[in-house]
Image 1 (cartoon, rainbow, N blue to C red):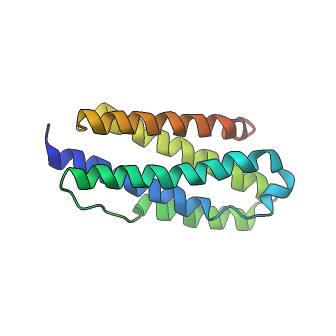
Image 2 (cartoon, rainbow, N blue to C red):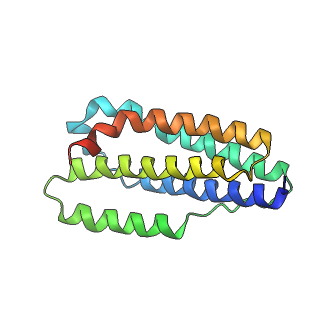
Length: 149
């Protein structure tokens, strides 16, 4: 197992987790007036993201790597697109929540790709698999928004 590859993959996941955290800040409070039932799930996703971030940083540090505590370029473009889309959307609440579902779907794909790469050590694979489980659980709560398109 190449330690540099493990650290690189973990840093990619850290960037994606940071993208999630930055994306969550785009959700406006008024969304919860019409979707109050999703608020606690959303708050759990935000809290879980912070835990995931801390776990990834810990794994990177344990392997002698330097945590890249930034966001990804793709994530920055996606957040800019969210701003544009929300500015033009007729139903801003639905558009915002659809973007949450889209972001979760993208994170799930990245986590699955990381596991499939074979570049993670056993401990990292276990943590990433646990985090992927949480992502899938969160996504399932917002998945119906994707189906409404």
